[in-house]
Amino acid sequence: MKFKILNGILIIDILSILLILSIVFIPSTAVRVILGLPFLIFFPGYVLVAALFAKREGRDIVETVALSCGMSIAVVALIGFGLNYTPWGIRLDPVLYSIAGFIIVMSAIALTRRARISKTNRFTTEFSLSIPDWGGSTFNKSLSIILIIAICATLGVLGYTVASPKIGERYTEFYILGIKGKAQDYPTEFTMANGKVTRVTYGGRIVDTTGGSGTLTVGIVNHEQQPAVYSVVVIVFDDQPVNVDLGGTIIEVLGPVDLQQGEKWEKQIEIVPRHTGDNEKLEFRLLKGDNATPENTLHLWVNVKATQ
Figure 1 (tube, one colour):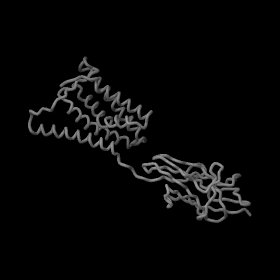
Figure 2 (tube, rainbow, N blue to C red):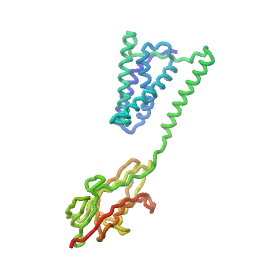
Figure 3 (cartoon, rainbow, N blue to C red):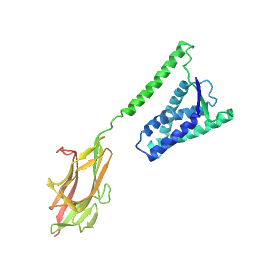
Figure 4 (cartoon, rainbow, N blue to C red):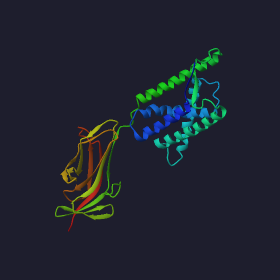
């Protein structure tokens, strides 16, 4: 049975552009999955086969799909291999635009070759939907059956992978940053006068302070693959609570912090020591949910001294 539709190459170009637009403007959508699978395992091979074999004689739809899938796997692998040695690396945007560029170039070549070969039906494609030739040898029949089974199995595995994605590693990212919001320039020494902090040393830089505290940034990122509540973040000085100034409010506990998967919480806090001492352990304890055992701990060693 034969039927005509819009040129398959044009359809692939349109769908590729729609995929790019959906990723750029609507990141969280099922369109990414629906169009992304054929974009990787069918589109590149189809346009490449069309560019190489412009006359299109002697192939039915099963052979076209098989050739396209096989060529797509090879093309995508080679593009990924090439990107791995570029500054962009194998990331979403470089892979997306590289494959889309390949599809557009091969589409232009295929359409140009077909236009030169035939002046009619430039914008339509005729498909022949028929059962493979069962009148051939037993070997040919077996190959046809194996080919159909392989295609169905591949589609089934891909469908299962999309429907039941593997859950990644579960963990919580917990960190502290220095005065400039970087992993450096942490407070190393507090100088107190009349029970109030007047000077703080960040790395090798001394800063006079009128607020009576030292500045730090505390951050949490949820990678637990599910929502999580970090009920408290406790900050202690040798097991003695330390006052924390959070937006002008003095507290002893940070939280509760309710984060969705992939969500980040980051706050700048002010540390207010209560007593003097050398090599004091400033410890940050992260508690998750109702668990009293710390999920993670971080610490700094600081000196707190009084002026003479």
